[in-house]
Amino acid sequence: MGKRDNLVRSQLVAAPEDKLAASLVVLKELQDAGRVALRAADMTRTHRERLLKNGFIREVMKGWYVASRPDEPAGESTSWYTSFWQFCAAYLDSRFGEKWSVSPEQSISLHTGNWTVPRQLLVRAPRGGNKPIGLIRDTSIFDVRLDMPPAADRAILNGVRLYSLPAALLGCAQAQFESRPTELRAALAMLRDPSEVLRRLLEGGHSKIAGRLAGAFRNIGRPKFADEIIGAMQAAGYTVSESDPFAEASPITFGARETSPYVNRMRMDWARMREDVLRIYPKAPGIPANAATYLKSVDELYVNDAYNSLSIEGYKVTAELIEKVRSGRWKPDTDNNDRGQRDALAARGYWQAFQAVKASIKKVLGGANAGQIADGDHAAWYRELFGPSVTAGIVKAADLAGYRNGQVYIRRSMHTPPNLEAVRDLMPAFFELLQQEEQPAVRVVLGHFFFVYIHPYMDGNGRMGRFLMNLMMASGGYPWTIVPLERRKGYMSALESASVEGNIKPFAKFLAELRN
Image (cartoon, rainbow, N blue to C red; front, side, top):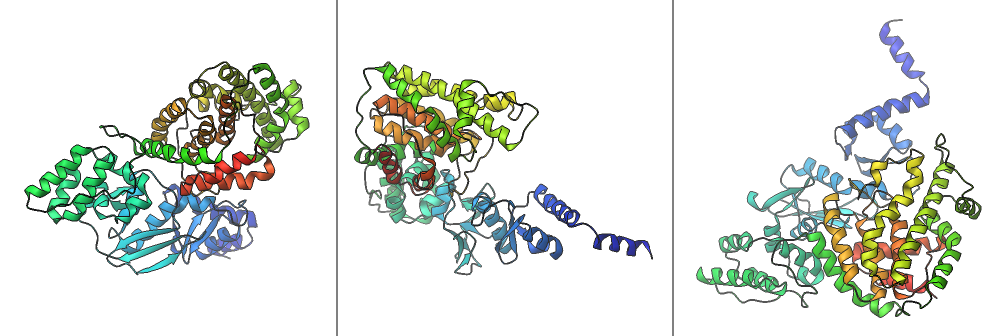
């Protein structure tokens, strides 16, 4: 028998785990090359079927796959949502080359930092099929047969082909100004000079669009931009009728200088959402006269709070473990990194962070501004939360220094948290809003929501958000509030509605019900 026959025979008798390992090597090579969208032709049929059977890849559409985790439950969406944009870009590149772009409306969303996964991605392409292409998890692509914008009006952002911001503002439908006012105002505020849109308006003779954009700039407090657009168009012989495309006045005043679209969106959403919160959430009873009694009541809730908060995050803890940790009878085993050890480390960290939050509450009960205290103390809460894991060598000490240094995703959520550069802009602005907010109910609801929306840390954001919420509870005299494990589904669903749809009402109602 020759060498080739021996090689074939050895492959035939290889153990199943060796065969899977060989297929995983192929998958790893594709991922190392930056491939997210995997085509059937990228690997042999044998490797593809083996990876599919064992849950390491998932079919998105016929002949196209994405990597997945074999331990993901049926119906899990995380791997798809985290792959969505890169997958769509790769798929569309394979079909159309450079001749495609997402719609002007979707372009504005991406330019302003909204990377929420849409139910249907609208795409323009000269060779578009004018029909939807179904993907998994109730998502789709609809490629419309339309001409591309000129090369100067195109851009690429994170691999996605889109309209440049000025071109998108000219190309988006008027109805978008009423249906997505936050994004449109944030986009307008990103422009540094009216010439960015004026050149395109003059070249195309877009007098109607000029009147719409002039009215939009005046709405956000940029009258110089509006006047320059009207004046230049009239000087070129066009008749322009200015009209405000927004249904209402701007909820905030925009500065004259360019600012982060993330910050502007948050400020507008805060102003809009606070009205819903005030209608739904009970009025604050006021800071209690006896701080010691309030703090004692907080102490009495510790075991129940720790059990529910840690369980919501997937830790397996018991009341007995929590009591053992609280009494100091549990010590970290630095040589043991199993699941039970991680649960115990999380419980110990929760106890330490709980003490730090209580110290912050004491300051607020003494009359300190709750937003300022949260700003100054939350880093210490975080260090305490993960301190035991650092001691055990599971978490690096450097990981506790400041906010996250990479992209993070939320399990099963269509919301993509802001990138790390945006986090640096958002967090100071977030605490400024907390400090300036006069209504405790708004601080409670929007404080929790926007903290987890930003997701400033790689881990622990849910626990930190609930700690922050309860500091704000104290600022209005509300009692410490526990989110029960059995209501986790409703809790996450309400946060998803606020993050993806901009609807804070379900979350405000959810928190209000916890007080009954």
